[in-house]
Image (cartoon, one colour):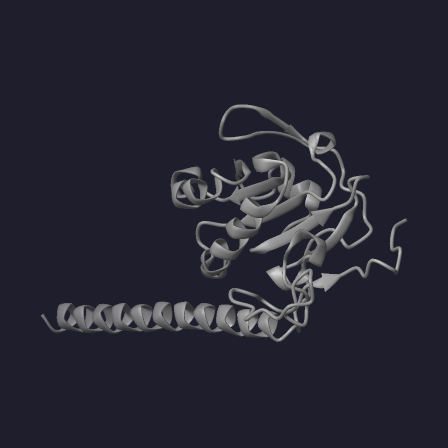
Length: 214
């Protein structure tokens, strides 16, 4: 009787301890994610992906319409964005990204949007991106993600005519002004100010006069 009661008490204590430990681990993960996001906003974390001036390796993928997608088919000044269904900043950036993509000449072929993650969870992002971009849905380290060496989201690229990375970053401010995106100081292509809505500072940008990779 006493032994059984002791076993019950010990089991209950262990169960409570396990629940507390799981709660602490979950909170630590949330805290780490918050710190990483704060560091990215303040420019401490640099973009993870191909650096400016780097040629994009060839890749082969299929878009949501079933059409093949390859590097050599991307036009000059192509805009490429990587998003994840589980990424909060991706959803914050989406309105500015789709607005820019809609303004670019060339229609949907001018912009490649890659949704990385569980295809069953990608529907919302695909629905928002498909009207203005060619959309590829793939698992992490899929063909396009591997080619661009993307490891976190959102990550944006612009490419030059030779399929080299022209600019890379986590927000609209990293993109060159000729695409109509706001510059690092919030100015647009004509120098007009912008409120910078949806921007995530910390991207690296190649100045046009620097000739990096040329």
